[in-house]
Length: 164
Image 1 (tube, rainbow, N blue to C red):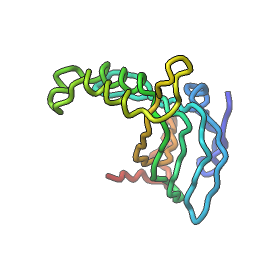
Image 2: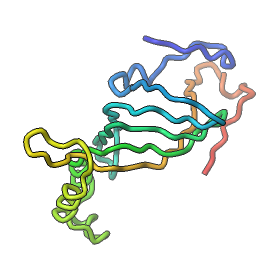
Image 3: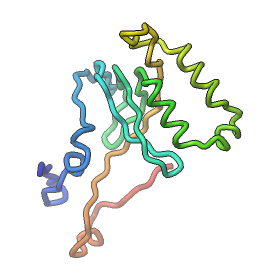
Image 4: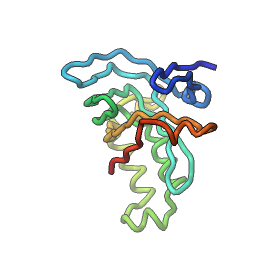
């Protein structure tokens, strides 16, 4: 198990991201200028997703991050190309016809529009594009989880702060 030392906690913590998410970790080159991180494209970025308690995934091809960095958080944009079939499957699987109808969305019409507007990754056999340009707003906060086994949390000088 890989571990990180957190000297301010006086202990070595297990890296949960390695234990449970090793297959999801990607590396990319990038640069930081004036506290803004801009990455080079990340091949296939797989993001676990859950909507209405139904787990699924999103696949982004050539994903790039543009993040404003601070000491404890980052916010910005994830942009790339969403795989049309995976995105549509996630939507249909997670949102029933009833929920789609509330937004006046026809699942069949939406799929046809996604296929028509897809602008990247042509299929080798048909030549039709299989991915569509997309972006997500990103807000991240670094957190550390520590299990209080001997009252260490209660006596800690560090306080939790929640931001809306």
